[in-house]
Structure formats: structure tokens, C-alpha cells
Length: 475
Image (cartoon, rainbow, N blue to C red; front, side, top):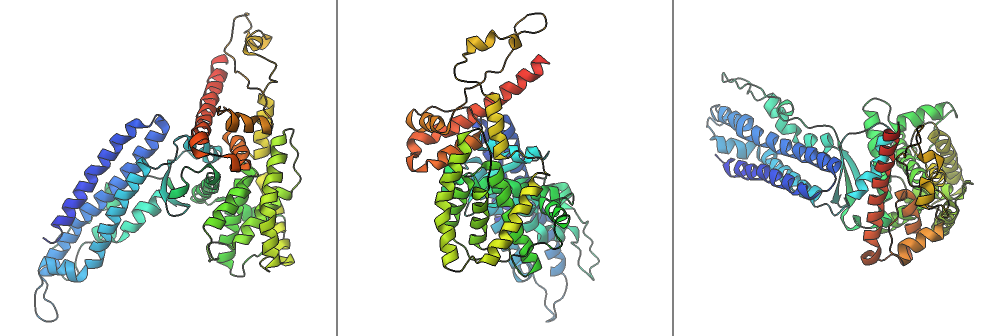
């Protein structure tokens, strides 16, 4: 049979997924390991769907068709049936199988620090979403469900298995639901540009992708972030502001700008710098799915010009640095006629609506993160020994309790000097840390500072787990 070499090749790819799973033993984080194992199992099930459809449904259907006389009065062999009728489908099956194989390899050897998972998963978890979300390298930033990535390309093969019989033939083949036999679990795959996977300046863009994941997941329940925003807008204005005359394109453009706003509101001012750098490196023309770059940049610029109060100098310095970097680009858009007063008015109205809308959803903002950092920190004059002697360290019987060690409150310059001059990692919120890092990107050296930044995220996670454990123990 013509399909035998292909089927044998797919058998080899299926075995290779198990080999890739074994490589995960080197990952030191159990939660990430479980998510990746589940994702690889989904790809393996995708390969099994291809295998079963080719070996059973398609092959048997070809045999039946070979017994039916053609209009010319001839009979085709099963191989000829496959070549003449299903050549495109078989070719697609091969390409899809190879894509799955490559995707598994990109997951296991992603080049993306495992520590990023713990930082970025905070966003969907704040919405109560705990499905697997994994990262891989690719050619552009994009978010897909497991269904979109794995099941959707297999639809023609799945349909043949569901309806394998040939009209007019007495030979019957039992239909098979391959998605029930080899289920694809829910979850998400976020693709990061290959050359940017280990570039901290591009990591904030992943916050945008995380909010897209939230939007997709809540959308399954009919309450996507975009749906919630549209509902909220109706309570504020008569008509949704238009940045594109086509209804569907307008909604797609609004979605991108909404995701940018939620990302900058969560990550902080330096998201604007990352967005500008991303747009400059990967320039694109507007499409029905993606808005003008100038719309996205101007919307981020509005965040930088909005008055915000914080007891820390971190926000004000980062806001000023980002504004100085973005403003020349905004001026250029205005001078070249890409942004006129009417477009700026509509984008400003949208921004104001998004600010109000953001208060209705439960996800930490950068200002809240700074406030929590200030509240949880002690002055540097308090030592660990002093802290242990405080009354709060004793239970009602006067015995020692486990306590949380409070790090001293660090200013923008102290964080900068600790990372860049002394090479010491800090256990502080990665959003705060990365804003300071990106604001001083001209001093960043990958060989010197990359591991310090990644280790800081690891320390922050360990500290967060320790603090949560202490809260439970002391109850």
C-alpha cells in the first residue's frame, strides 16, 4: 500500500514524543513539567489521529472505492484511489505530522526561561484560569488554543473517520470519533519570536499574549474580556468608538488595543518601550485583524501621560523614561499625517473607557504591585535579629512563630545598582524589577545580567511560596 512508508514514519514520530517527555526530567519545576507533559500528550494524540485515520478509515475507504467502476469502465487500485483522490489530504497529513513533531521539540528546548512561567501565569490565575499554558519559539507572537493548534488542522481526517462509508457500496465501515478516542485537552500555546526568547526587553509583550489567553478562555463562557468591555461601554456612551469603519475590523482592532492597555496597566510603563521596539523590529501593515501601529503606540503613550500617584519613585522614573522614548515616535506619526486630531480624540476616549473598565476586573495593576511592595517592605535599618524579637513573632503562649522576612524598600537607583553594578539578584515582583531593567536597557549585557534577572524571578517565586506557607502554618 502506498501509505505504508508514511504510516511507518508517523509511528516513529509517535515514539519520539515519548523520548521528548523523558527530557522534561531536567526541568526543576513540577507544575511546568506537568503542563508540558499534558501538551506533549496532546500532540501525541494528534499524531495518533493521523495514524488511525490513514491506517483504518482512509485505507479501507480506498479499498471500497477500488471496487467501484469508474465512468470509463475501469477499476482503480487502492493506491491509485489514494493518489488520484486523496493526494492533497495525504500530503497535508505528512506536513501536519512534521509540524507536530517540530512543535514538541520547540516546547522542550524552547530557550524561554522556565522561571517566566511562574511570573506570567499570575495573570490567568488572577482570573481563576488554571489550564495548561505553555511557551514555544516561532516567527511571531501569537496565542492559540490546543484545539486551534492540533485538532483544527486534522478536521478532514477526523471527518473521514466519522463518515467513512461510500454511497452505493454494500460494504460498511464502522464510523470512529477520533477526538473521543484520542482527546485533545484544553489549554493554550503562546509562541514567542525565536530571536527574542531570551531578551528581557521583549518579555513584556508576553503579558499581551497572556491577556489574549484570558480573553479566549473567558470567551468560551460567553464572557470574554472584549465582551465585558463592550457591555461596559454601553453603560457609558451611546455608541462604541470607531477606529475602523468595518464592524468586524473595528472590533479586532479594539481587541488588540484593549490587550495592550491591560498589559501596560499590569506590567507597568516600560511595556510601552517594549511595544515600540517590537513594532519597529517587526513592522506590519494594518489588516482586518491588526490595527495601525500608530494606534497602538499612541494608546500606550496615553498611559504614560496620565497622572498617577505612587509613594515609590519607580513609577515616576519609568513613566518619564518611557515617555521620552515614545514621544518622538508619536510626533513623527502626527507630522506624517498618520495621527490627526480626530483619531487622537477617539483613541483618548477609548483609553478613558478602558481605565474605568479596568477597575471592574480583578487583576493586579502595576500601581497595586508597587503599593504592595511598599507595604510589605521594612526600612533597611531593621535586621532579621530585630524582627525575630518583635511581639508579632510570638504566639499567644509566648513561643516563637515562623515569620516572614521583610526585604528593605529599594528605590529605583538601588534596584538598578544592585542588578547592574553588583550583579545581585533580588526577590521582588518581576514586574517592578523588569521595569527598572528595561528603563536602563543601555546598560544591559546579556552575559553579565541575564542570569541575574532570571535568578531574581526564581527568588521572588520562592519567597512568595515561603510567605504563603508561613501564613498557613501560623493559622
